Picture 1 (cartoon, rainbow, N blue to C red):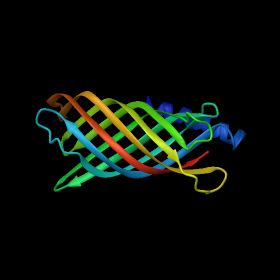
Picture 2 (cartoon, rainbow, N blue to C red):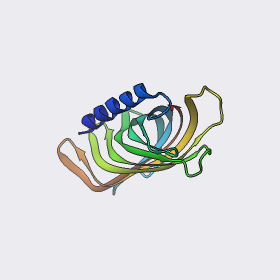
Picture 3 (tube, rainbow, N blue to C red):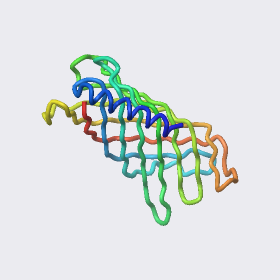
Picture 4 (cartoon, one colour):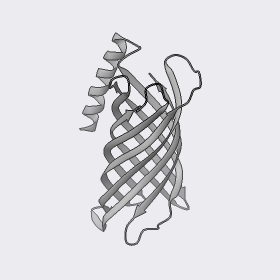
Amino acid sequence: MWFALVLALGVTAGAASAQDADRGSWWAVGVGAGGTRLTCDFCDAARDVGGSVDFAMGLRAGAQGRLGIEVGGWSHHQEDVRESVLRAGVVGQLHPRPGSGLHLIGGLGWSGYRASDLASDVVRVSLGVGWDLPIPVGSRWTVGNSLVLDAASFGRLRSGETSVAGEVGFSVLRFGAYVRRR
């Protein structure tokens, strides 16, 4: 399902971009750091910090908004365990004041947590804020930063096919910088 959505949006965005480079489609690449916390009866309550990467693309929704799809990942390595969170979903960005760099970010999608033989796949909600910086990098490019919280609840932590814990939640708090093509 996600592949079909990505393909459809990519074809649509590519067609819109070819028709008019100043309107229609956008894409962004971001890097940063994120802290992840897994919550369950026996989970460590500490937030593990690691690198984060994001890619988003979509179509403009009027002069103040953008809608699209986003994929990304987070990773942390400690001792002999590599933790990772992959995610994919839809994203919306709204500039409440025209001409301001401030924008609100919201999204819905899938997150997959992995650590050694442990795994959890859940529906997540994303909420955040971003700021387009007034750095001149050309008429079609914007750089900025964002702070986004991805939160998921009611997941199931499993080892292989065996359920280890129920009602598991996790969150990823991401701070990063992005480059976006308008």
